[in-house]
Length: 121
Image (cartoon, rainbow, N blue to C red; front, side):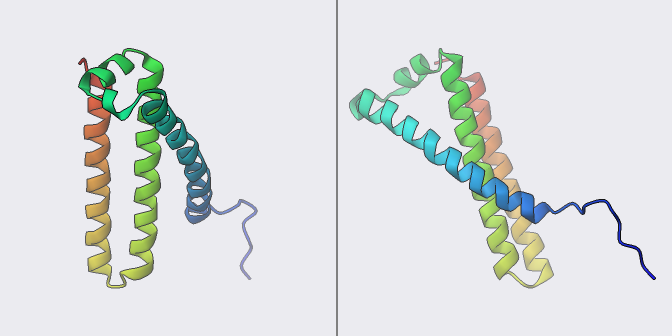
């Protein structure tokens, strides 16, 4: 007879499902704030490298943009991971697709984060 463990099992997919809902809602709010500030408070004719440099003098905007980048990449990467798991059946192709996905997400995060954190203008 096998005893059931009283410890709850770690459920990565459930946590992933919750993450998609929470991150999606946060991305919508952050994207709306971004669009209002950049496109309505300032016009598109003002957007330049100088505008970004001036904006990023305030650490709050750097953190805001970094959080938006992080959430968007993780949300999109997790969505692609789910699609790969659902539609690519052969183990070799699935491993190749997931490895490629993780590399692309990491590189985009590394380059985007490096620019945001080191940009001096």
